[in-house]
Image (cartoon, rainbow, N blue to C red; front, side, top):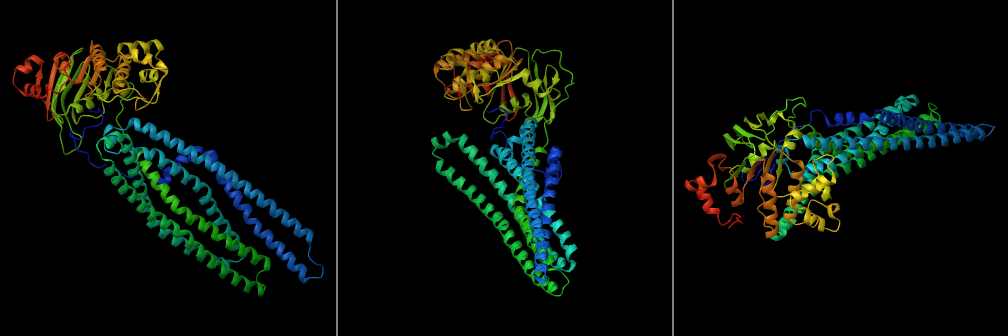
Length: 607
């Protein structure tokens, strides 16, 4: 049994129903980026400067053309000095525009990375505040994908929005202003081309948006499956299910391929379509401009500048079209991140909440009703009490609700009605850190994080000294094997134990609880087989750990049941029998039947 992760046989999972973000993803993204307000404003100013300088260059080149034409037609010849000054000025403006664009890019990158950093921080903090039911109802890989892939994609989209899209929109505005000043009639032709391009882009964007949403959902499914397959690789191989897993992965991969193909196809159509419209407008402007130059309405230099502006007009239009697909992809990712950030949180009591004066470790379930899904009640009116220092063993068949008792006691889930009390205080009124400092759990499958053995033992205890760590390891019967390792307590281990056996990992987990010294111990006895010596060490350590503490034990060993002060026999979410081993065995009831059926299967090293 895994505490905090409801068993599949205890409750059925329903697909998570996610609500849309509380505001539009684009608006939320801009708000997040506004945290770097100075850089953001500087980025926009540099973008405007770069665009403004680039718009002056065609006018300078047009003036050079007019000088050449006037010189050819007149008797004085071409004024090379004036033309040279204009060309040098144009070159300087081009370099200045490029420098401003480079600075804009660096600032945009800084703003985007800063936004991604804050989003990762927000998601990391959010995960610690999410109710266990949220994580139970979703594949772990999908949650990881939102924190990594989706945030990175959102960051890239923001960076492109600050560089390409912003510059393109400013360029469009500047070009239209310059073109109107030169020739309103020719501008109408150019604007017609621009409107046609915008309509095509809008139509394609409307169709691509749901495709990108499906693509990123498919990415989350693939990541979730891969994470599950890697975690359970040993079981897949041992169970001969690798072929079946390969087929399941292939199906998810095909869905991702199809979703990505549809999304990228629509995005790929945008740029060619807008480019074609742009060149069509360019041809029309060139022809009409030539007619006006011949009639004397415009100078040759003005026509040249206008044609250059028209050619440039297609650039930002194409840029906007090409980035629209990326923007839709990024907004789909942003939506997935924001849905996670907007998810309902576990209620955290105020730090000023009154603390219980009695810290003896009395546990009481008071008329608790609970279920994992609204349509299925698991507990109804569950009541029992564990006195200070008492060991309560919970036994029962699979699906009886044993793990749910532990989940409620640790605050992973909240009762629908009734209360779970610790020393007379409802645990819902206790801040989580206070609750988990007073109630500690040792699970079937011990968890180690990447770090040294000393760091793993000290996990959850601030400023633990080396002597404290070694003392806890000795109490847990772990000191002997830790000192035998090449690097002793400095040995680096990971989630898989780093070469440690399951039994050794369990001893380290027990040492961690010894160091915390809680009033209440929640023990889910391991059912996995370990060698006889390690089994004896674990029994000695758990017996010592229970001494003087209130202990709630999900019992799998007959010796634990015999030593318990109270045994709760659970069935279908109800306590059907309670008492000590001898009296329950003599009743010929559920416990006696369970004992007779499992006597050979329970570990009883005393016989």
